[in-house]
Structures are given as structure tokens and as C-alpha cells.
Length: 271
Image (cartoon, rainbow, N blue to C red; front, side, top):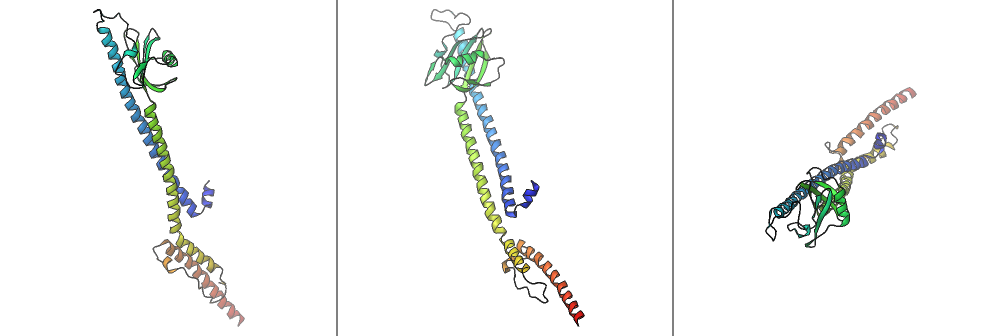
């Protein structure tokens, strides 16, 4: 790999090297941005979930400690149909588990409550609801939800779910935007690097062209004059062209001097 890299032109090395650095930095920044956004969105969802679960628990408690129409308290463990509950947000799902079975459920959609789809009820019933930490669950027919279980009376479990889909759609769009911006930044960086480096190396190209022209001259002849010259604008000592031109000139003078010596020595022997 190193040998292949060394075989590339300086222009190619600089363009690919700079582009790789920019791409790496963009990927790191983009990844951190998306991960931060995901964590923030999940925190918001969990806050909404906690509020919905509190509302469900309070509704159950309020119903059971209140009096019915005949002035008596409801029998223990009873609950009015969950579709009659209010205060749940659009897309929320609630379920009441007693004895390990889902005895009632509600799905809030289109401004009303209806029983949750059978496949959703089956998924809730077969899940383990140990602990009270929020979890992500895929509910068949309803997509992904953040769900939590709250204890009720006895072995009851009050299950509440908040749809994750709208928030995750926003995360997906943000991820696509970050990926697009990263690709665009990479293309712009590569083009700009190519243009800048190509412009910066033009003095070296002119110096190299002059050196190549000098190399074709018959330097083995005595007192041969070297007429090709590096352009004046490339002879500034502090510039890369000036440094290269000065470096190119030194070998030519050093090479020319011994040639003259040899030529003089040969003439002496002929005399």
C-alpha cells in the first residue's frame, strides 16, 4: 500500500490525503450529531411515556376509589373499559394485564379510542413486563413503541406505549441530511484541493519543464551556453519555484565545471 501511495503524483497524493482527512472529520462529526439527536429524541419520548403512564395509573386509581352510580365502590380489580379513558395522546396504546392475561386494551387514533389490534394484544401478552424501565417494543400492525409497565393492584400490570415512529422519522431525515452534507463537503473539498494544489504546483511544472529542456542540450561540449531560463516570476527565493530552480541550477553548474576541466586537459595533451 505504501509503495502504491509513493507511486502516485504529488497532486494525487494531496487531493486524496486532504479528502480523506475531511471525510473522516465529517463522518465523526455527523455520527456524533446523529447519536446526540437519537439520545435527545429518546429522552423526549421517555418523558412523554412517563406522563402517559402516570395518567393511566391515576385514571385506574380514581375509578376504583370513586363511587358508582348506586353510591358503592367498584369491586376490587374492576375497571371501566379502557376505551372510555381520556387524556392519552394520539397513537398511544394502553393495556391492563391481570393474571398474566390482557383483559382490556385501547388504541388512541383519529381522535377516538378503539381496542388495540389482536396481534398487538398478543405481542403485549407474550412479553415479560418485569421491572419498570422503558423499553422499545415492535407491536405488529402499529410499528415500534416505547413501552413501560406500572404495577396495579395485586398482580396487575398497567402497560402504556408511546409511538416512536414520528420522532424516528425526524431522526431518519436528519441522518439523510447529514450524510448528504458529508458527501457534498467531500466533493467540494476534493475539487477545491485539486484546483488549489494544481495552481500552487504550476511553478514547479515550469521549473521541471526548463530542467528537461536543459537536459537535452549538449553539455559535454566546451563553453556551451545554457540559454533556457526559469521564468522570472518563478525565481523568488522564498517561493517553492525559486527554491526548486536554485536547486536545479546547482547541479548544472557543478556538472559543467568538470567538463571544462576535462576539455582543457585534453587540449594540453594534444599539444
